[in-house]
Image 1: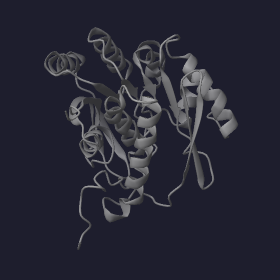
Image 2 (image 1 turned 90 degrees about the horizontal axis):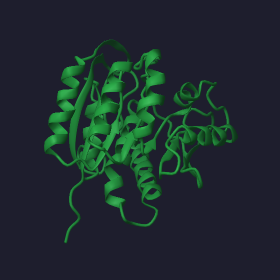
Image 3 (image 1 turned 180 degrees about the horizontal axis):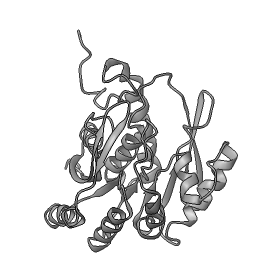
Image 4 (image 1 turned 90 degrees about the vertical axis):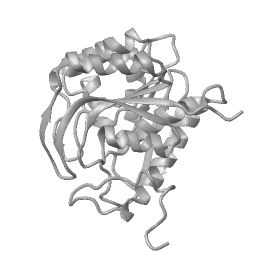
Length: 281
């Protein structure tokens, strides 16, 4: 019998350029063989160079979106992206608890690639208090880790180890929960991510690809993990293998990003690199 197609929901903001946020999440789900659903937490006026505006829908309507979707569709995994403000974080956490959502991958989106803020400072405490208890895999980059831990961002792999340990302490103890701390902000040609469950610290190495097309890489990686977790459920080291496959997918998407010519800033990765024929082929 063939494996059922996972149903994965993204709860995130909309980037009209399609490189990040909900649109990028849906591309990732589709590219990796998952059926994607989406709940809109924020509308942004955004391109590859800047975020010029953010509109947050009323909380009653956000709640209605989540309730209507989850009441009908059995969701296998959830990816959380831009949540904008404390009220949105509270609403999302409340509904995830109500529906006992499992395999929640939380990408704590705080700043766009352009440097524009995507999460209000007042919302960070709500992320710690309400959202992290519902999180199965937390995927911060180094600046986001610093904000969550109320300290400067890690500046070495050694400092990443301690940060990953402290982040894991913020997740429920006694349960299987994971931190994927992304080291892409460290200098140098080699990249190191850390995957930690409170017991095993797994170093995952990679090579930096010289390209400006890195818009939405965090969204894409977290979405790939969410899409792949149901595929690996019941297998050997399911979270580790899902993360390794997600990282490989993102690496290839970045490497193929030059085939796309989108915007004049940080361009998107090529989500469908394995599915689209190259021009002229």
